[in-house]
Image 1 (tube, rainbow, N blue to C red):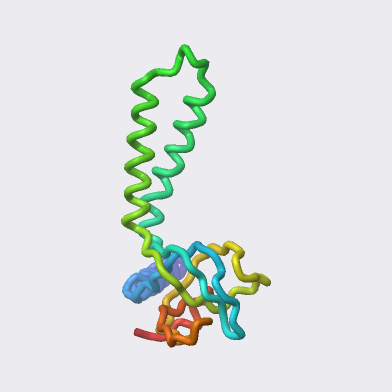
Image 2: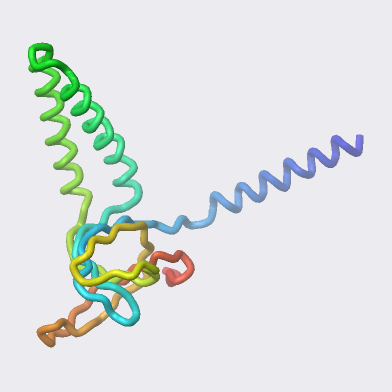
Length: 159
């Protein structure tokens, strides 16, 4: 009897904990990839594209399918290549590229928390979390405002 009560208590506790966990607001992450424009003391300016995690989850399987189809067609002898398969690959590639274009937002982003030693012109990509806005003075002396992201969830401000 004690074992049953203990098991019931564990299940109730787990259910309550799971409910609290699912009711908590999700922290949206983004994926940024691009070129380092300027390395500053408190972070890095990156010119590139930003997409949401949800967009990437939808697009990545299409990109993988395109790669598999391309390898399969490339491995076939020339006389066995089916025109229909090649046309399907071209259509899928165009569709995937259009989705990527729609999902990615191009711009300049300020990212903190990057531990890599980067220099101007190098490429960087990674998952980040929106923090707030960041102002800086460009090389030409113009004051600019961009979105600030962090590689750490803990730096993120509450909405």
